[in-house]
Length: 141
Image (cartoon, rainbow, N blue to C red):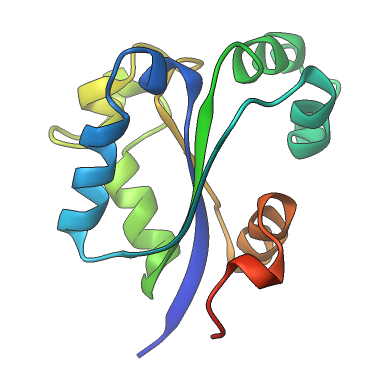
């Protein structure tokens, strides 16, 4: 069994629309374990640090505006193949292309306002988890 951790973020649009509890329920129903949860509000500067990989892209400024527009919920999820399982549960980045029953299909409205974020690889997951959570906040693995 390959138990791994991944970062999930319930974005401001989903929190603002009252869908955070529904997303959490879907996560719990998927069998992924919740290891840590934190509600916070990103500043544009902190959002810029987190999304530095997108610096210079046409949507970067709008992304920072959006991610700093309201509270988010960061979660550390774990389980066998957690990265893939979380990404499958989220659905495609564009809600219009997402599979029925996925979080983005149910609660996203477009590519930018797509309800959630998930790490895309083990290296990314380690860096993203460390960005929001100290080692002391996580169970020993």
